[in-house]
Length: 139
Image (cartoon, rainbow, N blue to C red; front, side, top):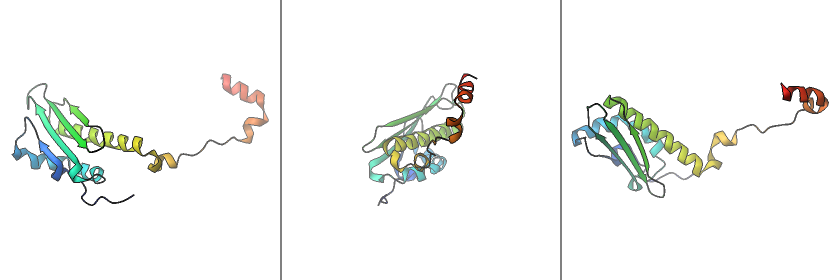
C-alpha cells in the first residue's frame, strides 16, 4: 500500500455550512480530530467535509455531515440529537463507520479480519456416528 503524499485531515478539509459560523470551525475540527486517522489514506485535495445544522439549539435540530472523496460516492450522515455536542459526535462516529465499511467493500482482500477467518474443517467425529449426527440435527 502506498503512502499518500498529502493526506487529508479534518482541519484541512472541513467547511462549516448553514447554522455554524467560522468561529465554530476550530471547535468542530477538534471534535472531529479522531477522523484524521481514517482520512489519512485519502488525498487532501480530493477530500471535502461539510458540517451544517438546521434549527440550531432548538427542539428538532438536525446536524448533517457530508463527505466527498474523489472516486467514491458521497457519504451523508445525520443526527437529531438535541445536544449539539452529542449530535456532532454522532455524525462523526457514523462517518467513521461508513468510511470503514466502504473501504472494506472496495478492498476486502486487504482486510485483515477477512484474511484471518478460520476455515471450516471436517472433523472425524461427524463421520463416525451418523445416528448421533442425525439426533443432533433434529434437537
